[in-house]
Length: 168
Image (cartoon, rainbow, N blue to C red):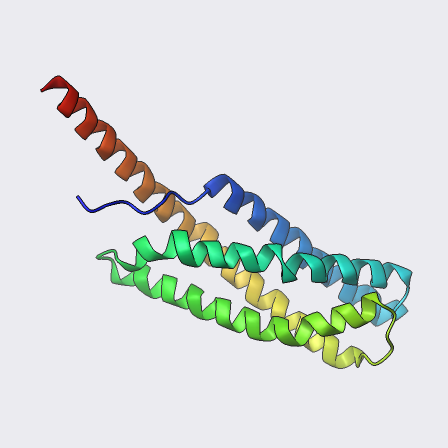
C-alpha cells in the first residue's frame, strides 16, 4: 500500500466551513444594510471583520485543502471524484480572483473611505457569495465525506497490518 498523506484536520476544516458560512451570511447582511442605509458604523464594523476573515483564515483554509484533502482524491481511480476536485480547485482560483476585487472595497468601507461604488460592490459581493456557497456545498456533500471515508479506511488498514505483524 502506498504511503497515506498526512491526515487532514477534519474537525478544524469543518469548523472553518461553519465560520465561512457565518461570514458569507454576514456579507449578505452587510450588502442588504448597505443598500438601505449606506455606509454607516454598522457597515464599517462588519466590513472590517469580513475582510479580515476572508483575507486570512479562509485563504489558509483553501491552501490546507489543496495540500491535504485534494491530492489523494485526485489520485483516486474515480474520474467523477477527480473532476469534482478539479472543479473545486478552479473555484479556489475564481474565489481568489473575485476576492482581489472585493477586499479593497471592504477595507475602504471599514476605514471610512468614500470612493466605493455601491452598485459595483454589491455585484462583487453577490458573485463572491454565490461562489462560496456553491463551493462549500460540493465540499460538504461529496469531497469531505469521501476524504474522511478514505482516511478511515487507510487507518483501519494500518491497524490490521499492525495487528497481523504483532501476531506473527
